[in-house]
Structure formats: C-alpha cells, structure tokens
Amino acid sequence: MKHTTSLKSVMAFMLAILFTGMVSAADNGGLESLRSDSLELEAPAQAMKKTFENDGVMARDFIQQPPLIPHDIRGYDIDKDHNSCLRCHSWKNASKWGATRISVTHFYDRDGKQLADVAPGRYFCVQCHVVQADAKPLKDNGFEPVDSLK
Amino acid sequence: MSREFFLKRYWKLLTTPAKVSMGVILAFGFIAGIVFWGGFNTGMQATNQEEFCIGCHEMKDNVYEEYKSTIHYSNRSGVRAICSDCHVPKDWTHKLIRKIQASKEVWGKITGKIDTREKFLDHRRSMAEREWARMKANDSQECRNCHNFDYMDFSEQSSRAARIHGKALFGVDGKPATGETCIDCHKGIAHQLPDMTGVEGW
Image (cartoon, rainbow over all chains, first blue to last red; front, side, top):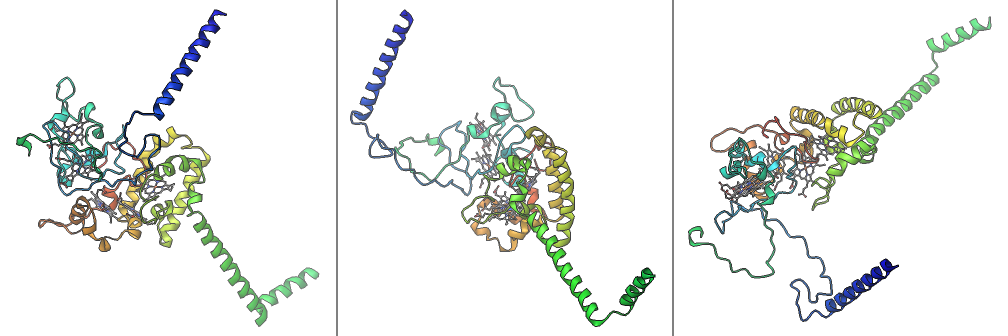
C-alpha cells in the first residue's frame, strides 16, 4: 500500500515538472531563434545545399586541422569491405588520380606505433575530414588563422 | 483399303498442291512465324522490365535496395538506368547469349543459392567479378549506350572528372591515352561493393 502512494506522488511530481516545462517553453523569456521567427514554430525546411566541388585544395586555418574535402563524396562508401577514399588517396594509388597522399600521421596508431597500413583509428576518413556546402553561416565567425598559415 | 486411299490422297495433295492450299500453307507459316517471333521478343522484352528483375526477393532486398540511393535511380534530369540497361546487351546476339546465361541464375533461384543476405554477400565478389569481366571485355558497351565520351562536355564536368577522363581518353603530357574503360574506374556505380582486396586499382 505504502508503495502505491509513493508511486502516485512521484507521478504527480513528474507531471508538475512537465507542466512547468511546457509553460516556460511557450514563454521563452525573449530567446530568439536563428532559423525561424519564433521558437514555437518549426521553420520550413530549406533547400538542400550543394556540396562544393573545388578546383584544388582548400586553405587550412590552424595547424593539425584535418584538411577539408574539396570534392563531392556522394556514393563513396567506407565499410569493412572497402574504403573508397583510399582508392584515390592511398600512397599506392594517389599519383594516378592526382590526389593528395594521406599524411604519414595516418600510419600511427594511438600509442604512437607505426603500422604498415592506415591505422584503424584513421580508417573512417569522414570522421575528421568533411565536405563543405554552399551555406551561409548562421553566426558570423571571427576566427583568424595564425599568420604563418595565411 | 481406306488406309491406302487416305495415303494416296495425302500424297497427291503434297506432290501436287493446288495454288490455294500452297497459299494457305504459306500464310499459316507466315502468321505462325510472326506469332512465335513476336512472342519470343515479347518474352525477351518482358524479362527486361525492372519489375521482372526485382520480382525475386534476392534482387529486391539486396541490389535494388542499394541502387535506389544512387544516381541512376534518381537524379536531377529524371532519366533512369534500369537493371537491364546495364546488365543486358542491346544487340540481338549478345542479348540472347546473356539471357541463356540468365537461365542459370534462375536455377540458382530455385536452389536458393543466395536466398539470404549472408549467402548473397558470400557470393557477391564472384558475381561482381563476372560483371566486371563482361563489361571490360565489351569496353563497357552498356555504359556507352547512354554516356558517349565524344559528346561529354568536359568543361561542364568537375575538374577531377575532366582531368582523369582526358587522361584516359586522349592522353596528356605526351602520354598516350591509357585505354581504360568506364568499369575500370567506376566500379560500384549502382550497388555496394564486395571485399575489394586484390582488385586492380584498389
């Protein structure tokens, strides 16, 4: 019996929290959304952004930045059977395609041991390297690269 | 007695055909020909339809599902390449040969050779290799039925594509054309790839 009472009070408490939560969402204290006029309304979906397909590589902004991918990667899958990035970027194949060879750092595992092939931690390229889309940033970014990289 | 009479009459009919009966025979032959030929070609055509190709779950659940996310299923111009566009030659003799080979695939269907995803994946490399070999041998004819290098505007292509196509087709820096064909570089254009260890260029 005691058990049910405590369950009831817990549920009431949770409902109360939920209710206050709903109220405060409606009256959001003047927060503005970057994507729509009002937080309560879901902004209409924007058109899909086009991926940049650049001529040449993109500038880097800081040392140790994974370089951005300057080309479309539609359909380039990476799974246990094959890695389509390495088809062009491995040391063996890069010159044929005019692609940048993967960095030597990619042959070191996390303990700093040098391996004979790409380290497992570097296998999923798009974990670090990303394409860029033709989209205006919602917030201005004042980041400046160091002089030596300009 | 009557038997002899029958034979005689038949013999006579055959040796001295009247103009009319000759005409009738010819006409029948002609019509039968049309029916068979038409039926045959209709059969060839029916088995070229997308619905036929994905009529079995082996194709529908594996290759078709993967193909749906690729450029040949949906793209900005709305022109599609269906299974037979890439897998069945257009000219008659090669088409016939391919269809006869396909009967072996029907046998595979009956015996359940690839009736689960696991079995399918186990066989994927060997199936893919057969297609690569076929396309390599015919200079990727099926791709070229739609994509003609001569009419590709390289200036409209991405620089990566234009550069490498130029190398393959015309040769650059005094080097001759490499003579590679579409499938040498565009493996996995419509489906996921098998384990690629040991495949040339990978």
